Amino acid sequence: MPRKPSLLLAGCTAALVFSGCATSGGGVVAPPPEAAPQLRMALASDPGNADLSWRLASALRSGGRATEASEVVDEALSETPDHAPSLHLQGVLLEESGDLAGAVGIYERFMALDEAELLRDEVRKRLTWLRRQLVEVGVQDALASEAALSDADPTPGTLAIFPFVYRGADPTQSSLGRALTHMLATDMAATGRLTVLERLQVQLLADEISLTDQDRVDPATAVRGGRMLQAQHLVQGQVGGDTQRLSLAAAVLETAAGGADPTPVEVEEALERFFEAEGQLALGLFDAIGIELTAAEREQVGRRRTESLQSLIAFGLGLEAQDAGQYSAAREAYEQAVDLDPGFQDAIDALQEARDLEEAEEDDLDEFAALGGELLRPSAWELWLDRRGTYMPIEEIIPDVGGRDPFEEVGGGEPISPQRGTVIIFIPRPGGGS
Image (tube, rainbow, N blue to C red; front, side, top):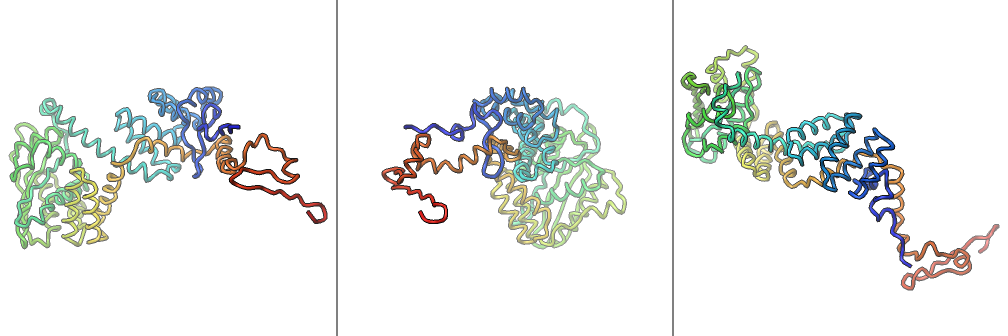
């Protein structure tokens, strides 16, 4: 006689109105699409149940009904704004709809919750990936809107630092140009006097307009890029020198039509004093822009980040690889930088980001969405199913459970199967014996 399928094997379908399935870790597996009608009925009888709303929205999403799923999640969050599983699912739905900025905002709300601890690492990786995508989208939007942006007034107090070109004699030090750009962006943002545009954003735009393709610095092209970025001021420059000496040269340009002529800033130092030279350059750029720093602000500029020039070179190689979307190579370069100087915090932070990007690039959004179920407590149905699943292997060796005759078994034993032998059951008599 064929065995009846268990509810567990049925996959939490119509019989499981209130649930998905419990997982071994204590969470919940999202119900399948066919459970949506029953889940909707259950929610109608228990409105405001955010856990149930998550189950319904998950079933709708897996069935390709993302709009309905979003409506269910939005309503749940209007009643329970800090419901972690619903925030997580809403972020996924926004991603799938193309609203990357909206997804970032939701994931940031999620990360602020205590309940998010279980998924904090996974969501952090997702945020790192989305922020990178947003920068890329922003650059493409700027290129597409170049005509309109070229005529618009720049945003006051904004600064774009374009990538420094390396013209030194030692090709093994070429990544110092990228590292210097990073250091200047950090230092000039530290005082709060300027809004410094994200280095990656400027780098990607420079790549798109071929600003750094030639071994030269093109002020006209830089100004064009600065206008697309809506920056008031921009900096571009170069790194020169040899194995002993270092030469840093930069210029401050104004993007507004009829702006002042470029203001040059130059620094020469011994190569081993690279970090001191960078600080002098940053202070010179503030002067060229016309910002007079206080003594305390000047101390913030040129902070020494590492004791190792080789570590900084490896860090620059990591930036180059990461800018190009080569996250594995970036991770390896940052690991080298940290090995050379374990206290180099910029490299430590960049290493985490590269690891996140490398892993997020391989992520499956459906698998990520399913993680939200780990934040829920299994319902009574789900716990029952979990227990039933635990004992199902026993049913595999016991034929026709419903047709068993206990009297026959007590009388002498009933074969379980021709392959598996016989089970003998002994019932002890009161007072001893068999």
